[in-house]
Image (cartoon, rainbow, N blue to C red; front, side):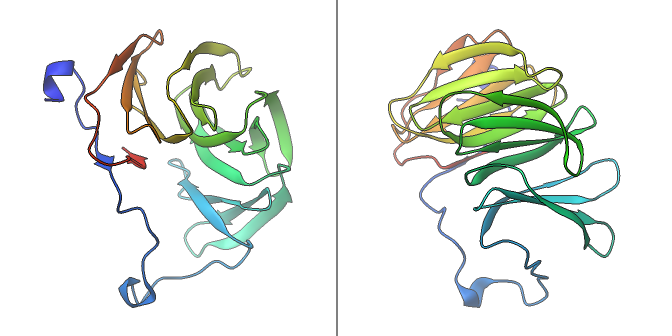
Length: 202
């Protein structure tokens, strides 16, 4: 069915978004204890460094291959809901409603206050996609954080967003059980309503 819409490679995670139980976690996992809590991570494709965002608004950068902490800094006034490496920059988005572009640790290049609490973020090339608590989905350029398009897409909060690797299509999933695909210009294509509430997109 997805192929008929021109969308390929979109994976939906439904109700199985609960944390792993202790008995299910890999035995060789290395826990980087620098946050009170964290649920967003991104690898730098250029050098393998890892960026993590915390529930108290902090960012931490970890250096490959041993992942010792390079730097940690206070980036936002609310939980960090998304981090990414895009266009040679670090990008972070927060429940405080801001999107920030960093040239390096503490090196703030751009800041945008969207005016809406952010729940999810994805970034590819020069495009940042964010979803909000009120169902708004919006795309911005990494360079200058210029608005590309905005859509009042969902009824309720946005649970997940994704960008195709070539940045030609976008997707969002919401608490309204809807998955929506967007063209580069923001034109929407609503997929059939999912049986469960999607909470993950790839």
